[in-house]
Image (cartoon, helix red, strand yellow):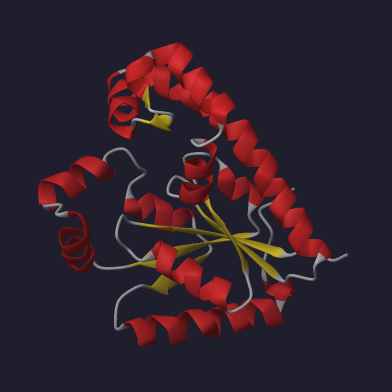
Length: 208
């Protein structure tokens, strides 16, 4: 069984990281979507019971997580964010390791980790390489206005909770442009993925 190449994807909010991960998935890569994984955990009764025991019935309403309440709690108290992460992160790590292991058993060449806080959570240490999606701010803001109604102030507020983009770029191994049409981005990503899959020796693994 050969180990698949593990690629992490980072970039600014609205840069197109998930779109690029989806293109890679359609091309045969196995994609670990951190947001989707967290959403799945929030449906587990044992997770909901724990959160209810911490923050009361307003945090879990009709058997479902009240995301607004949880967001307020962890935004106001950093220790509560740490508490939540200590509950979720071990479960996420176990599933991520299992996904990578199964990909290798199935002959998969590439696993993509799409996680909003990849560097902040130390997930880059599990990657062989990290790809930075470089998309101009004006394009990202236009996408976010259309998708979520965000303005410049909201984007700036959200970005303060993450590593600066220049730091992310500096810590990454590859840079892919997220600008251009959907077809242009797709062609760019597929070329990159094919090059990586064809010559894994060019990657200097971050994993020890």
